[in-house]
Image (cartoon, rainbow, N blue to C red; front, side):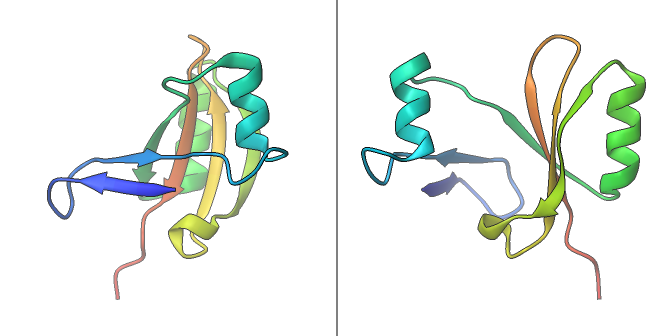
Length: 95
């Protein structure tokens, strides 16, 4: 996994590749092929963002849980009414 960005604070692209023949990523690629998988948005209030997405017809695909790739910040997954998979990432709290 690698994150590509042009400048701090700008959008990033995450590149993912299988880490072995039995990895979930390899299974996904074998079944569906490569390409865009999902979009991720950093949000100030994860619970509120979930409520807002659901009000627009999205379905909660995975409840919030800590994300290893983001230092344990919570993430949740929703499917929009248009069938787009969206990852919601809790923004870091200001100190």
